[in-house]
Amino acid sequence: MTIKVLSKQRFCQLLGGLLIAASQTLNAAPVDDETLSHGEYVSILGDCVACHTVPGGEPFAGGVKLPTPIGDIIATNITPSTSAGIGNYSLEQFDAAVRRGVRADGKRLYPAMPYTAYAKVSDEDIAAMYEWFMNEVKPVDQRPPTTELPFPFNIRLSMAAWNLLFLDDEPFTPDPSQSDEWNRGAYLVEGLTHCGTCHTPRNLLMAEDSGLALAGGAVGAWFAPDITPNRETGIGDWGTEEIVQYMKTGSIAKSQAAGPMAEAVDHSLRYVTDEDLQAMAVYLQSLPAAETGEVEQAVHTWGEPGNQLAEVRGVDWPDDPDHLSGPQLFDAYCAACHQPSAQGTPDGVMPALFNHTATGRTQTNNLALVILGGIHWVAEGHEIHMPGFAHELSDQQIATLSNYLTDMYGNPDADISVDQVAALREGNATAEGQLDLVLLARIGMVVGVIVVVLVVIWLVRRRRHRRPHY
Image 1 (tube, rainbow, N blue to C red):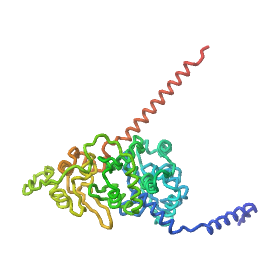
Image 2: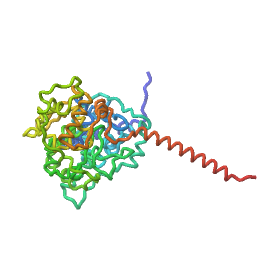
Image 3: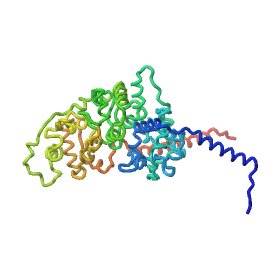
Image 4: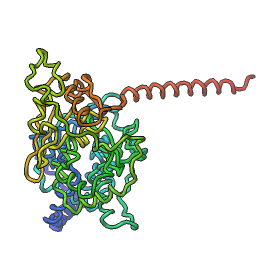
């Protein structure tokens, strides 16, 4: 047996390391309940659970597919698991991921994770969120599938250049000329609640178009509408209390939340304090109205009550269900809840279908998606539920019903095609007007390579031409 003798220098190094570690353990300040409570509230404002929790799954364990024009981005596990989550992250690494889009291993995150908005979050709120995640969230040792995007978007290093172009990493700075309430609202809208991530259109490089902030954007196949004070397309005709109620409950007479907005209400906004919701409303109402061109009238003012059911009741249905008329489909699937004249229920739980944003917009994906998948969220302690009819109605029937609703009770310029419904049903549709960014990127790379080759050829020929002859 060989006994290894430590040198005096090595012994002192080891002893010093042990003493330092012991000192750090003894002197580490315990995490107080107030910090944890504040951290939980910050995570609720940030709506972390919506993107990082599969319905019915473990909280924050990841696996949610976030649809984008370049493919699905799969949310990661952000529980304090040391094998599958962020359990080994230091505060500095957590901060880098949340506010700059850089993982602990140095790889870049895609901006589907709204770090461009979280960059505005204060040091205090980031630290509180970190402490809450590390101390109160249950670790889940479950690794979701990795994101697999098509070339060239699978090169994460390209996000470093994207960040140089589009990431403003300066934390929010209050405007001394505005009230504390306004500044709180600006901090929340621009930062933690990241409203612009959904409601601002994006350019060809998938960055938010700052010139059209909050003027309406695409969220997969859903359309997040204009939330500027534009009176025709936005919330310019909404009172402060209406905006607060909509964020708190997802429902006012002229509009109901659906899709990603319903999730935001369900997971985040209904837990936000009335003071913070009021501040957000005040800030939103102070912004310049988006310029959207000529619009005939406000989206929530189209239509009127009407009843064509007497014309179809007692009439035999056609042999081919795809030949059912709009009034027949409305009678069979809508009238019982929304009432025969589409006036809704007196308590407002089932809304009127006229003077409503769902039937007044020309962007019709949302209307078809609601009929396909329904609406389900919790508001003020009770559930709001509209069944989806994807399993009962064909693409033709849903197109017929949708067009009847917009013609009879909404904007007659709106149109839903059978092909559009089919794509939405299969989950292959993108929001109207979106371009094929994968194709554009590949074309751009080919053009770039050709330009580089031509420049090299030009430089070589120029060098030969200038070479002296003897």
